[in-house]
Length: 270
Image (cartoon, rainbow, N blue to C red; front, side, top):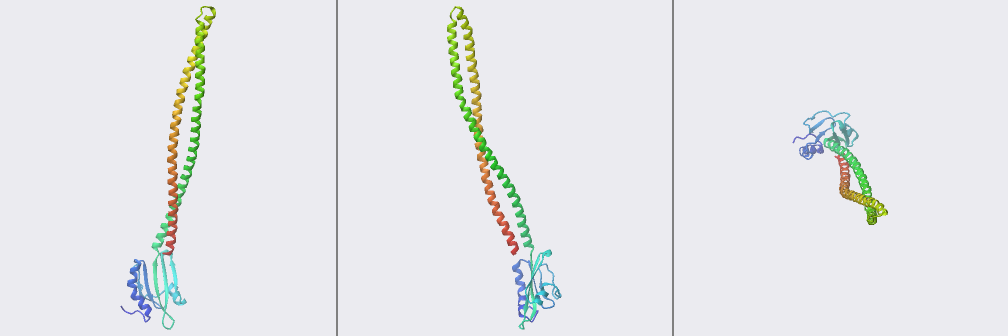
C-alpha cells in the first residue's frame, strides 16, 4: 500500500484500517491526518474525505494544537469521535489518528431500557394495586367466615328451643288427654272439660305443626350456611393463590427493574 506519510505510526495505522473496520460491524469510521488535511479516510457511510482540509475548530485541530487526545460527542448524528495526536521523532505533532464511533446502538439500547423501565413501573403499579385489593378480599373473607361460624352456632342453638317446645307440646297434649278423660263424664263438669280438651289438643297439634315447619326451615338455612361456608373456603383458597402469584410477579418485576437499570448502565458504556 502506498505510504501516506513519513510518520511510521500514521502509516502503520493506515495499513491496519481495512482490518480494524471488520471488528466494529461497520459502526466505526477511521481516518489519518497530517496537521492540515485528511490523508486517508474510511467511513461507515461510504463518504470519502481524503484530501479535505481539517476543520480549524474540530476535534482534530484541537488535538494537534493541544497535543492531547480529544473526545467529541455529536448527539444529533449519534456519533462519538476520538482524535489522538501522533508525534514524530522530534516530539512535534505530525498528524492525528481519528476514530468515529456510531452511537445508534447505544441510543436504541438506552431507549429500550427507558421503555422497559416505564412499562415495569406501570405494571408494578397495577400489580401492587391488585395485590392490595386481594388482601382486602382475604380480610373480608375471614370476616365472612367468622360470621358464618357464628350463624352456624346460632342455628345449632335452636335445638334446645325445639326440645323445649316439643316438651311443652307433649305436656299440652297430655293435658288434652286428661281433659278428654274428664269430659267422658256425663255431668255438667264433664261437658265443660270436653270444650277445654278440644281446645288444648288443637293447641298442641298447632304447636307441633309450627315447630316442624320452623325446624324444616332452619335445617334448610343450616344447609345453606354450610354451602356458603364451603364456597367461602374455596374463594379463600383461590384468592390466596392469586396473592401468591402476584407476590411472584412482584419479584419478577424487581428482577426486570434491575435488568432495565443494567441495560441503561450498559448503554452508557457503549
